[in-house]
Amino acid sequence: MFLHQLYICKNETIMPTKNPVLSWTQIRNYAERWSYEVPGTRGADGKPIRTVSFNVPEAARKSARQVPYHLRAVTGKGELIEGEVITLKVLKNHQRLVKFTASNEIRRIRDYLIISIDGVRFVTH
Image (cartoon, rainbow, N blue to C red; front, side, top):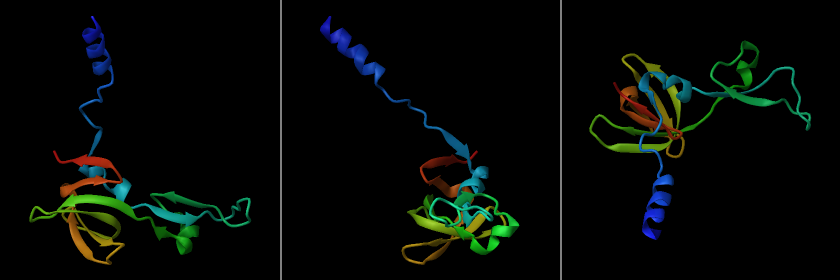
């Protein structure tokens, strides 16, 4: 009887086998984030409030900076690369130029070979 109860308790704590994933066509929502000061707002310290979003308002373009994100991807040769990057440019054919913040290395990444961005997994169809 005791072993049977232990088996039930063990099954109740098993994590789900399927992790939530997104389509690789939604990468733009995660790879092109901007941080900017919201015009006309002040925090408790008197400084403008800084926020992060996908689209930057025209009035806030001067204070806009890209937010680095953690990227895990496979290269065309099959090597796994990962690190903190910012997107420099989006190219045709689902490719983007990214700059690694630690080494300042610039690489071309294919969107359909990206595994995850900030822990969110992407799949190809």
